[in-house]
Image 1: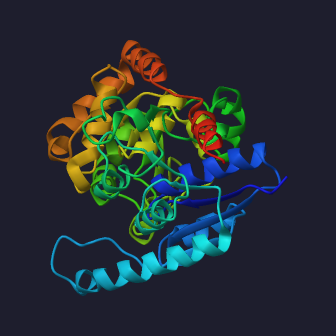
Image 2: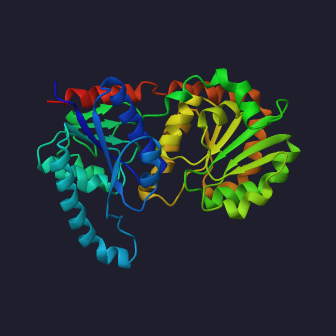
Image 3: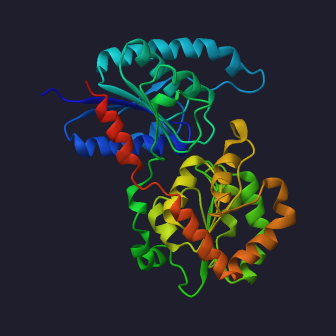
Length: 362
């Protein structure tokens, strides 16, 4: 029997990279001798993260269109043409059974070429509001695995399947890891722990808020694990103390979720999916700087079902204090948020997506 071969593309942020790796890992567990190749954007974080996960990756010379006139924009048609040509060469040399895209700049030209060469393609759309690339690619894709309902207005209904987003499998039984987590992060077991997640690159406005509210956390006897992002570590590491731990990036997400009693987070699609499985009380602070304001829409889908709280950046100065205070003091609210967000979790997402990919193998 011939070996199965898969090309996977996803990158730019952790939100596109981790789902891609989760899908590859599940395919690998079903087809141990399969061959995998990742395709990313040559100067983005996938070029480090994918090899760390044990997979080969090739980079395309591609970047997104900036919203203002820049050299990047002038070069865009050249980069796109170069990426399409290179994608075609990669596909013809590797001969994949299926090509899978989880979003990010590189997945556009790659899936476009796979479609034109009649290789089956699968799109995994993480957000409640798809980006332009996936809307364009969906017309030719064989399957579109989505995480939210009501996306018929963007994608052909007959190709869509509601699977949820792939998340790290080690998050599923975090309740058993609490003791290990408290040791790992050297926490005081008698205090409540607040986890702050600003996304893989960090979030300036969230970091400013946390700096300002450190005295409040202290007054409430809450210890803090603060993932500030790699761009901000230099600025915020001075706040490291017995009660505050500042990280650029957290490797053991399973343990940090196990240790947390409350979470303050951006509302990127993969964070929302992870937090649904983890089931801790969350305050979402959506980033207003993303395309189509999709973080607000992601958070709202949970808030509308009473599974989380949400504060817009513009409301932080006025309302954060009250909202956080209330959450820490009100155990009924904590319990209600936990129970409701857990109901929205889709634990089998990775499996369900891989089932769809397997159906397309000729």
